[in-house]
Every structure is written in structure tokens, then in C-alpha cells.
Length: 137
Image (cartoon, rainbow, N blue to C red):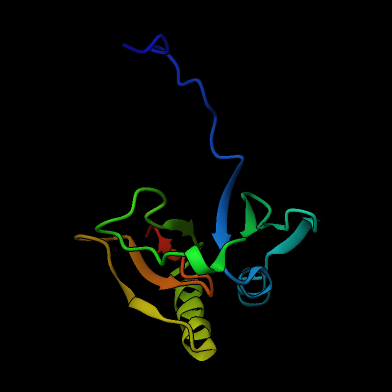
């Protein structure tokens, strides 16, 4: 039983770390396609830190490419997907168009989440991580 029955012990996400096979390609997805900023870099890891001004992602370079496994949402433990909020349906449509034009895989185009009013889409960033974009409606 939790000792935090009256109030949660945490106050939100500080950052999320994603391991990727090509750190520059994944960083460029967020920076070039979504307008995020690089806020730091540690070449000795290597890692790139990027942010949209609200959340920070740490992108870690996979060190053992021969042992790398692609994510399978039916067999893997760990991050299923990263869901990022957008401010409008128009922005969601612009993201869908930009991802489609980049040649990256779109799992599904914008559609209602359940009965709505939320609308979401799912795609893969260059490293294979599933990214959901959601407009709450």
C-alpha cells in the first residue's frame, strides 16, 4: 500500500530517454520536422538532448547494433509509444503531411480516438520508436 494516499509523489515527466540506431536521424526528426531545439549533447555517451519547451527527450545512440531488436508491441517490455499533444487538428494534419513527405512509416493517419472528440495518429521516428500525436479536441 502506498504511503502517498493524499498526493502523488511526482509532478510530471522531466525527460524521456529513447535508444536509437542513428542519433542524428532521430534528432533531425524532432528538430527539422517538429521544430524542437537541441538543448545539449554528450558526445562521450553519445546522447543528444532535445526539447519542445515543455518536455525533454534524451536520445541515446545504440552501442551494439548487431544485438539491436526492433520494437514489437506484443513481445517487448518497455516503452510502447510516446504520445505528444498538439494544439489543433490543423497542426495534426500538418504533422501527418510532413511525416508522409519524409518517407517515414505512418501506422495510421489522423482518426478519432474512440468516440472523439480527440483525434490522433501514430508514426515511427527514424529509430523505430512509435510516436503518437494527439489533439484532445
